[in-house]
Image 1 (cartoon, one colour):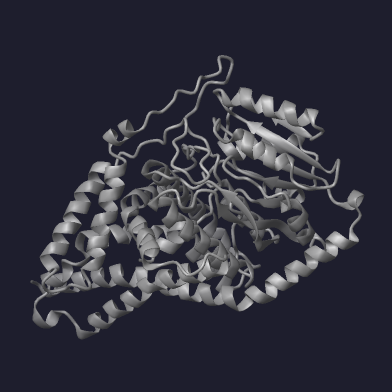
Image 2: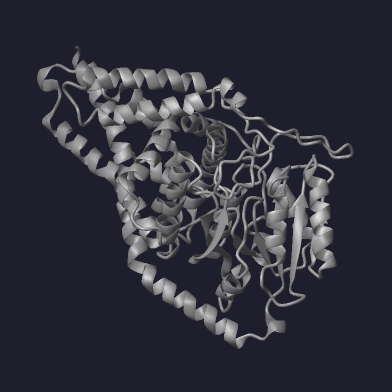
Length: 531
């Protein structure tokens, strides 16, 4: 082998090991940042909430509009509207806007539950548009024109807001005119439904208990998660911010960063929890992850130049924002690791493989442990106890298995502006194994994932006699990729009987893309892509 080729192999190996390691070690930093401030922030927020509740007369509470964007959500529509309407808040100070873009029987269900709640004395309005321009961003902007609230709470269709949600989060805006958003934490209605929901629930807990806490409580830029939070209307209307925009498919992340670049601040409260439904099958999970990966890369391409040119941000804030907006990109080197990472040492002869490379591999293993530390810390913080190794293993398998799906999405996000926003179908599940009336958009990568799974399994068998420990990742790759490919193969659809949902004759022309779910940017991958 020529010297030039040996150098190229070394550089490629260095890239494939060093880049994931940097993101992994960064997770240790986030765990430390979140943990060092948690007790103080919680105590301060509790005191503010209690003081405001005691001192503020009912008629002095600000008016709030709760927006519920919907598109063909028949199994869950009654649940979310009723829960939002029945939140505890001073009489006459809260209105619910159902932003219904549905084209099927959901429309009739929305009208029915809205009529029932109005008859019971609740202020519920149904807002419909002639077209679905810009999807969720367009629906939120359209509804805002008719909203009467000074503050705007947002809930996606799969959420069930707690009755105390508004009473506990609105006080955190008091005496802080610079706050644009107060974000709560997500809970899980069906966290134990399947191995997918068990793994994803752990990843979501890590995002909120570690990532969001670390960023917000230490003055770093964070994101509104698209749901389970409250916006100050003045921030959305601020000309420097520009309002909701549909030029990315993560409108929540986009607006969050534009608001913070304009000088607004955000607040994260991890003790106010809104439970939601987690995708329980492979296709729903892959569709959700594709949407998040494409969208966050679109926002990175759009706003990172503004981040680095900002005079308001420190160098530390800019670096952290860059890590935040590029964390999905780690999916690309993850694919390369699966393809050539273990083969590169075979291409080098004798002394061409420096001794320091072995130490680099050890650093990679230490970095790979970082997400596990974050998972355990997060689950302990939210009150679920320390997760066992099997649950962590499920999340690792999910993360490695999604590398092809997310890698393709990352590349798409780098070149595509806007695009199709495919919703994640909801079933109305609260823990049992259920299947809703809608089917996820099927992945076309299933065959490639199966082939890569077989390839990784072959590598694992080949290297097993000489590298039993290092080859474990190849085995996890093989399991994850095979499960993702097998679960989204065309024949998998036949396992379910999917009832037809009748369309509405006078509804607008149906459009496949829709965003009922907000994007907790970096929620799942931030925990997984460091592996």
